[in-house]
Image (cartoon, rainbow, N blue to C red; front, side, top):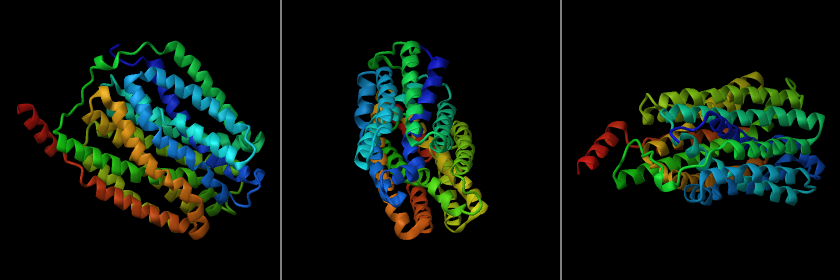
Length: 398
């Protein structure tokens, strides 16, 4: 197979959308669920979702290994069936601990996608940056769909339907994927080498930067995507109060921000990676600081800018894996990176409610500005294009 069939690529992109959607249904509906479960404040229920994000990270390591050794097609089938069934289980929970268990299962199956689905998608890609950008667009459109569809389902049907509907969609996608995805090449015969072969020391440096920057970037991603709904509700009070309308506004932010990944993905194929990554990471801090103080439509504008930059930073890690890692072990490398970075960033979900309850969103946004500066410092340690070319040439000639 010399390329990924379009129908399979489409389903892999849909899977990315579902992956992110499932992780945010609870955060979008948490106020309603908290009321039904007897909690006075949504902040007190939010920590129960931390298991989903812990397993989203920890599960990536075995998922990546199984993807490389057992098969990516098989693992994607496990993803579709497992995450769909887990969502249906979440829909029938009646207390916080049952919900925590169901969300942990969702996170476990959600951990499959990134180390398995993305390497499967880019395995034969001629322009991997552009492919990753489109895939990122799909994933973040899933976040937008979570915001708007969950809002409307909660309003019209109830929060349980917000888990049931995407759960059924995931199971249906699994049936279609089983029918159309062709048998895959044995792992040992996968032919796509890394674009740049580096000495072990420099490759270790790249992997360290990639993992550390992904951890700080994931902190920002988790804090914003899990907290934006409540942030808008607080800062837009008296301007827009209807939950469904707020969901539409948030979906608009995510839909627009998702386009940044397409743009960045194309730029990655043309512009030096380090320079582009530094620019995006550094620009996040002032906008987060502005959002800490903004209210009403000014907050909405600042939040849109913040999310464009946070989403725009996402393609870099996958682009580095494609550039520097042989396809035969990309799922394992992605799994190791995700285990560390998402494992650390899952703390964001646990801390979100208590931090906002104690210091408000003002404190949270300023802390995130500091995290953005940490990302910038980490990325500055990434070897430049000239250094990697020299190292690769020296390795080839030696």
